[in-house]
Image 1 (cartoon, rainbow, N blue to C red):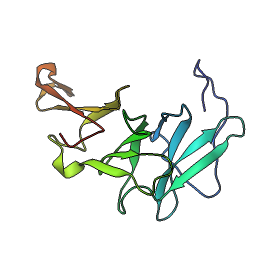
Image 2 (cartoon, rainbow, N blue to C red; image 1 turned 180 degrees about the vertical axis):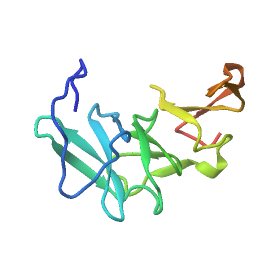
Image 3 (cartoon, rainbow, N blue to C red; image 1 turned 120 degrees about the vertical axis):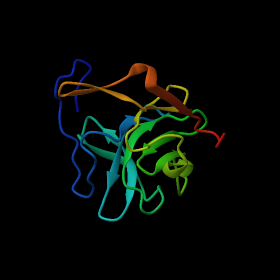
Image 4 (cartoon, rainbow, N blue to C red; image 1 turned 45 degrees about the vertical axis):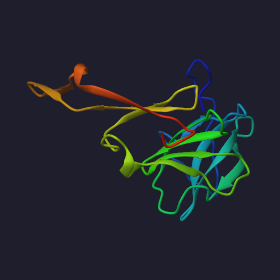
Length: 158
């Protein structure tokens, strides 16, 4: 954990669960910090207790079997959470058995794995794909005019 100035405070540890070191962290609609967790076969989320340096409330086995990883956890517009993962976009309300798949990755309007993504405050996920790149010596850079942005509401498949 880091403080508001970026200083190291402490590690969040668990003997039972692992988490993705570089992603799967966000704030839920309840204002608590959550992280993606997993054991050998199941995936879920847990709130983080910064005082104890430990996981607090744990919600396991909430995404469909075979889901690889959750990378963005954010408050949804009408749900407690919206998740972005390699398998699609999901919504979840605390206490429910399962997350709902809003957009499977195979239905995405662009190359899912190469897209850049972020959550917006209104519960939408925005992702961007560049369709053309420029080669300048050994450098490869995207052409800004060739970047397309896509928004996905956390409420419907529209």
